[in-house]
Image (cartoon, rainbow, N blue to C red; front, side, top):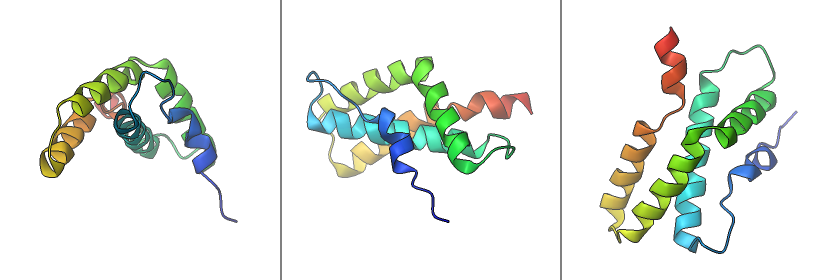
Length: 106
């Protein structure tokens, strides 16, 4: 049985007329990576889709969501070239990982 994870991640898609397409893309990509990485650290006591739903809900209520919105806007305004843009996004993701809380408890 194949599960469709995309609808579960839909709430992460940036909305609003204040965002440029580049900012929306960066924000949605960063949010998706952060949520999916966090999901990998959750206990396997529930189905994969339920863990992703829980991680999305947690993300949307967390300060990380605001940090990602602010960070994506700032990153998109800088006009980075491809390699530098990739590096900045990667650094931002590492700095804002939600799983840090889970791994610190172990």
